[in-house]
Length: 259
Ligand code: ADP
Image (cartoon, rainbow, N blue to C red; front, side):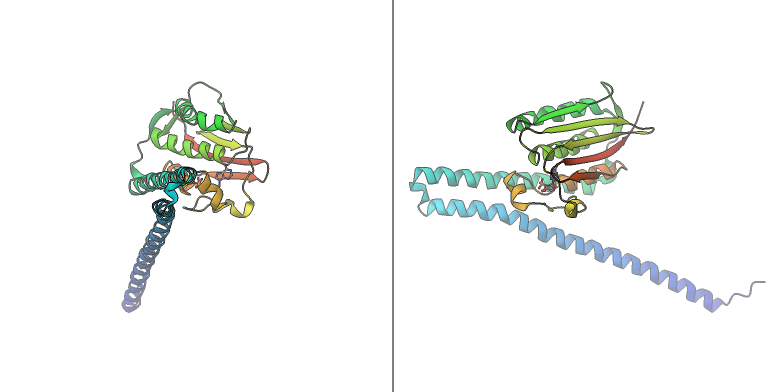
């Protein structure tokens, strides 16, 4: 009972083929658009600290150097701009490395508690300067997860660093591990000013900042959370955020358990 019209069949095949090619073209266009926007964003972000440093240095050359007080102030401002440039380039490199080798995350058996202790130790001085306490709550001294230790420590660094940067003086940062059936849930929470709801679904975008001037003042590159999201996704997990204005912000993600 095969009475299929060969012409109709061919027509169908052509239709499917064209639709597939159209999808490929759309995807290429999307990527091209992304690349173009990214390049424009990066150029803009690079220009800002360069222009600032240039401005301070030229003003010094033009005479500001003769006044000792003005000279010191301008030199410090120029140095701060260049520090920001340095941090930006470092974050851009990280982002491009992760994007290029996403499949090549080295996931192995690592101790989450040890990694977290190391991260906290590195950020202790920064927290201390703002009278912020970092509290780690863990049900055991060792927690084994399947993860890229280096990348997870980068993600934790960015989250805890943000909690300190945007937290309140004298506040607290809580790092908590909770056991689930197959994974460990990691939470980084602060009791800072929080993030207004209308910004919440945009903070993981590159260069998105709730308060541009505040982020820059604090040495932010606007790439921290974009990097965290990439790292967490590469571990087949999702990063979630909950925040309430004047109460605080909590970021969570999961990592696979191993024996
Ligand atoms: P930045 O380099 O500006 O810190 P991020 O990507 O790390 O960039 O964060 C994006 C923005 O999200 C920040 O500029 C800040 O406005 C907001 N943000 C991030 N973490 C917190 C937090 N714990 N509390 C309040 N706001 C935060």
